[in-house]
Image (tube, rainbow over all chains, first blue to last red; front, side, top):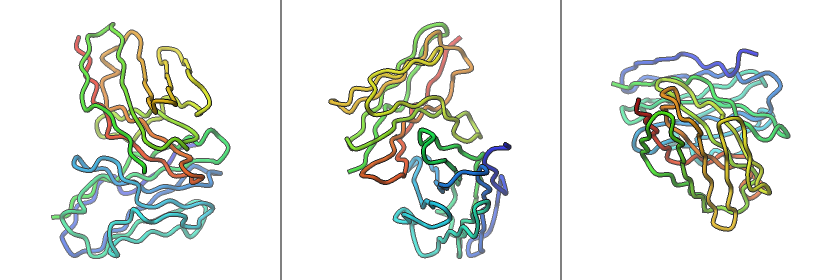
Length: 114
Length: 112
């Protein structure tokens, strides 16, 4: 398996624009997580899904953030409108219940909002 | 509440052992993990331990869990320059949920 695949790797956008981050989890995994990493706040869990259903979105910072998982092999994290303080590295991870709960991370998307 | 704390920096000489410590607050964790992050990369799972275990050894890595004190440590034997990275501990299975809570990360610098 190619692992968790995220796209794009880097995104630079202007304030106010819509940004969509994409994630393809490892095939067969039933949990998918979105994290945000910044120097100030470390790794923050934004939302996670089980079998494509959002379980906990309490970490989503504002209504500007939304996440979807239309099927088992694809998820998106959308920010609309984007703001400079959204600049961070966004990670997607997936895991399989019963496998020791091991989460595997993608390479991340580095978002810069100018 | 959910809180995972680590010291920010650790510096060791090549060939020495490194010990990275982590404390957590939620005693209902099912699994505890150690992840490694190299610059510009994602997090790589190094090892994990089930909460009913005290110790786990995996080649150069030894994980110790003191559940009473809610303390987790990672020992890296014969530390190499390639071990320089940020190390995160994480817990999951809190209160029956399946989310992972990560620590603040410890930046390990290995001096040649």
